[in-house]
Structures are given as C-alpha cells and as structure tokens.
Amino acid sequence: MTELYALAVVALMFSLLLGLVRVLRGPEEGDRMLAVQLIGTAGVGVLMLLSRVLGQPALLDVALLLALLAAVAAVAFTAQPREDGDA
Amino acid sequence: MSPLSLTLFDILLLVSIVVLAWTALTSADERRSVILFMAFGLVVALAWGRLLAPDVALAEAAIGAGLSGALLLAALRELPSAVTASGDGRRSHALRHYATQGTVSVLSVALAGMLAWILTAHFEGPARDELARAVTSHLELSGVSNPVTAVLLNFRGYDTLLELAVLLAAVLGILTLGPGRAAYRPSGPIFDALTRWLTPLLLVTAGYLLWVGAHAPGGAFQAGATLAAAGIVLRLAGSEWIGLPRDGAVLRLVMAAGVGVFLVVGVSLLVLGRPFLGYPPAWAGALILLIESAATLAIAATLVLAFIGGRLPTEADRKGDAVTAPAAGAGANPDPSDDGEPRPC
Amino acid sequence: MPDVLSAVLIIMGIAFYLAGSVGLLRLPDLYSRLHALTKADNLGLGLLTAGLALQSPDLFTVAKLLLIWVAILAASATSAHLIARHARRRETRPCPR
Image: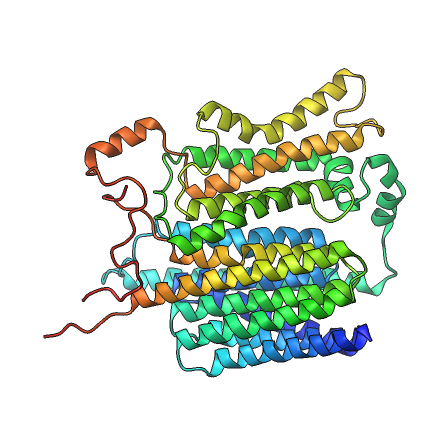
C-alpha cells in the first residue's frame, strides 16, 4: 500500500509540474490563476498522501489550511476597490 | 516510501521551487511575479511537510500561500504605472544598474557558497542533537507536549517576546500611514455565499490551531495568520470594519495585548520571586495558553492592518469623503457590466 | 478487501488528476481549461479522499479528509466563476466603425 502512495505522490508532482508550465506560459492572467488553483489542489492531494506515508497527521491540517485559502487568492486578484460614486 | 520514489519526489519538488523562485524574481510583469510567488509559497509548504516540519508548513500555508499574495496585490494597486526612462543620463543609469547587479550577484554567490559549506560540513560528522535531546528531556517541565511550542513559548520565550515587540513596531509604522485603502466592491452573490461559510470555518480553524498547539503542530503564529485570513476574506467581500472594534482605543489595546500580556506575566513572576518568564511547572500550560491567545489576536490584527494599508477610517475621514463624493444609493452598487459581458469599446 | 478498493479509488483519482492537468495544457482556451480544472481535478481529489478515508485509523481523520474535499470543491467553483468573469471583463471588443 505504501508503494502505491509513493507512486501516487510522484504522479501528483508531475501533475503539479504540468500546472507549472501553464503558470509560466499562460498568455492571460486567468490562465496563471487557473494554474495556481491546480497547484493548490495537487498540493492538497500530495499532503494528504504524505500524511499517511510519513506518519504525520498534522499535514492534514496543512492541507485543510491550503483548501480554505484556495479561494482567497482568486478573489484577491479579481476584487475591485470601491471608487467615488459607490455607496 | 522507497528511497527511489522519495528521491524522485524530492527532485520534482526542488525543480518546482527553483523554477518558481527564479521566474517570480525575474518576471517583467509585476502581477505575474505575485502569482508566481503565491505558487512558490504553496510548493514551499509542501517542502516543509516533506522535511517533517509541520509547524512551519502550517505557517507557510497560511502566510505564504494565502496572505502574502493578497498583501502584495493590495500593495500593487498603489504603485504608479511604470515611469518611462528619461533620455538624458541613461548611460549613467545603466552603469549604476550593472554595478548593482554585479555586487548583488557576487554577494549572493558568496552567501550560497557559505551555506553550502556549512551544510556539507554538518553532514560529515556524527549527528549532533544535543539541543534536541535537551528539549525532550525537559519537556514535561514546560507545560506542553509539543516541543516546538515548548521552545517558542517557554525555553526561548524571551525571543518570542521580542518578536512580538517587532510586530508591534510594525503596527505602529502602519498606523502612521494614515487612513487605509478604500474598501472593496462586493464581488457578487457567489463570493458572498462562499464567505458566509468560509469565515466561520476559518475562525474555528484558528481556534483549533491555537488549542492544539500545546500537543500537536500549531500555535499562536499559525492561528493568528488564519484569523487574519478570515479578516482579509471579509475585507475582500466588501466589508469595511470586518468586525473589529470600532473604538480606536479598544483596537489599539488588542494590538498591544500580544506584548502586553507577555510582559505582565513576566513581571508578575518577577514580583513573585521567580526569574523573568520562569513559569512554575504547574502553571506553565495555562500561562502559555494565555500568552498565545493574546499573541494570536495581536498577530491577526497586525496582518489585517497591513492588508488594509493604514488605520481603519474614522468618522472624521468619512465626513471628509461625504463632502467630495456624490451621495449614491445605499447597499451594494455593482459595476454596471457585472454580468461578465466584455466592456463596451 | 478495503485495501483493494482503496487502491482502485486512488489510482482512478490520480488518473483524473493527470487528465485534468493534460487538459490544462492542451485545451485551446481559458474557458475550456477552467472546465478541465474544476471538474477533473476535483473529482480526482474526491476519489483520492475516498480511498484514503477507507484507510484512516479513526473517524476524526475521515471527517477532516471530507472537510478538505468539500472546502476545495466550494473554493474551486467560486474561483472558476471569478476567474471566468474577470477574464470576460478584460476582453476587448473591436469598435464598429
């Protein structure tokens, strides 16, 4: 079982690297943000597996934090400040 | 995990980190740099997990992956657009540019070489873990069972007190910047729906991290960063005061409480005849929790204030604005093209 | 038996992850890439979570794993909406003469 976890972790890292290509290439800003979401989801998967493989249940807490903050990045990018004339 | 797959994982992780760091620093577009920096924070959190340092991984996930992206983006808004280089003096500018680059490169290579030498010299001898053994042998005296918390809040509590004082100095600096940035426009019903459950969940997670720090990875810094993330989420959703106390004095009291509670505990122990910050072992756990709670609030307030970019607007500022801005309808006033259609030409 | 089921779930999860990432690289447009990300990757994470949940020692870990998955689902859906809306707003339409 541990071997399967190890293979899965490596496969997820490959997935993360593919996302990296998109972050660097993606012509639009949206492509880069999209790739950051992918890196985040792959990272959460890696942490879940690592918490079993390395025997560190605290890594699940790290995964939880990453999951909760995943949306904050996208919002920070698209939020627009209020200008004069708004309420 | 077999050594081969572990090595492969390490190599992939290293490649990602180096590539992200390089491109984040050398990118021409600043927003691209910030996005790459956020991705960098994510991958470094993974690296901390791989290095069996979950406390640092928690802090990196909260601060590096979440907060610093939002902070940098908020700061980017303030920068004026790129100033075009003037024609005259261009040659002297280029020379200075190259001289700076050369100096920094030499210093960086020297620093990297020194670090590499230190690390490899450490690997040659037998493993030296006197400090780790000293910590574990005295762990039951510290009042907590997580060695990281024991070191931070008990054995090296003085260092943490000074770190909190540095944060307080940062808060004072931010407060001198004047009123903070304008609040954000509400982002629409979908983000509001997310905020509605994300904020309570972040608050509960912050409390959980603070509580669990006594016996598992967690603690005041991680909890404070998570609490700050909740404040930033509310701020991005369009709220202006994000639930902070409106009375300036109370707010300042909360921000000073991190250092304040620490000092009060230390001095009281002095008065009682013990050394400064020398907790009696029976009370150590409770005292540590008290100090960490105050520190969590102070850290969260500092980070949120950094995001706002100044002090929260008071009634006086608002009266000043009301004169200049025309009175608009109350409540959400979304962008006219908020249905997502491309802007008209 | 639970081991075999977990293994199958994890393998399927990884397959969906890789499919999503390949889609991210190969699809022509931002909007279609958003589909690849939010559908394939989150399903992959769900299958991975299910496989790991079957192997978990206690109920608290299972609850945490499920919470992580649900949080990612909601965050991905919201982010996809925000990213798409942001990109759409930045599109310029050529002015008719």
